[in-house]
Image (cartoon, rainbow, N blue to C red):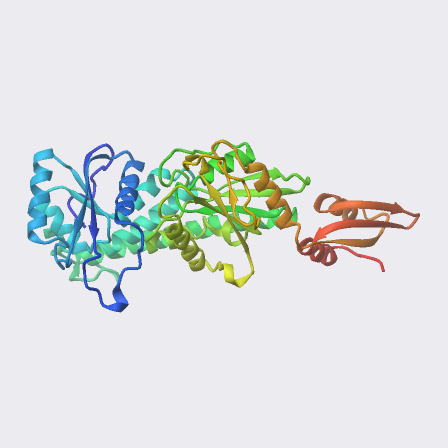
Length: 439
């Protein structure tokens, strides 16, 4: 823990540093996999800092030939940055990497300002963005898990020993051990609360499955325009600020497709490269709607220079959630957004010749009608015509077919009702399972 742990980071003079590790000779097993441009990485971390309205005075790429185990940076770089921090009265240094607890503490002591790394900054952003009880619990869980990993003997109280009665915290328990145990107790309590929230969410999901409407979830790199697209398609008013992680808590709306089919559209938290493990674990419940979706729309920022690398990051996180395009269990469709930002003499077509890549502008609405048609067509691919003979008195079964299928014809006799209806494979299986059908 550092003596700056209670420091408020909003609206303070800040310096942002991106260590360029390209010149380091890594062992093959430890080589970083990030292929994005160094300038793009700096731009992203500055965007993260701006997302919580830090006053970024300066940002800099620092080339490193090796990493100092105790201080991360070499002595020359540390002294140069220290002079700048003192002269500009900088109160916060953001370093775009994962620092060890010792490295963070030593830099804070040397620079006499608060130091946070990439993980710490993302947790701060998530804390600022959480708007629901569940979101707050998830942020707190991620923060405590992170704090637990940062416990170091920084101050004299960590060297004191504490006596105690009972079977917990016996004589000689060090303060650092007490801190760790208190955090463990708090984490356990949060996990119990989140378990209750997940149970409630599962009940809601089960209720939706009984309706049932197909779930279409928007996924993608943060700031790709998911919330803008969500608003355009659903007529909602979700926050759409031009900043990273403007959306944290999932939002869902019912919309009607051109064919008259109803679906549930879900907006989700944006993904990002090097998403901390603490956050992936804490926010799995937020992404449960993604795991249970019938279709994923992967919204991509076509104007971004690293759009292909961002795609890899998104697919990697989906794989961590047990979702893989190769499995064939779930359909993932790429939606190329922000074409309005591309310099072009002639307007692009919404669909390419192969009818695969959909290009849209969620801001202007260009291509959104074609997107709805494509969603409609994809969700109809597994539909077939079914003929059922039902008891005329079985009003529940007849109503269910009208609600969940496209009824093409109905013929009623004294004892039976014959219905021809278009159903998806999933709904057909549910109907056979829950209702009596005569031969």
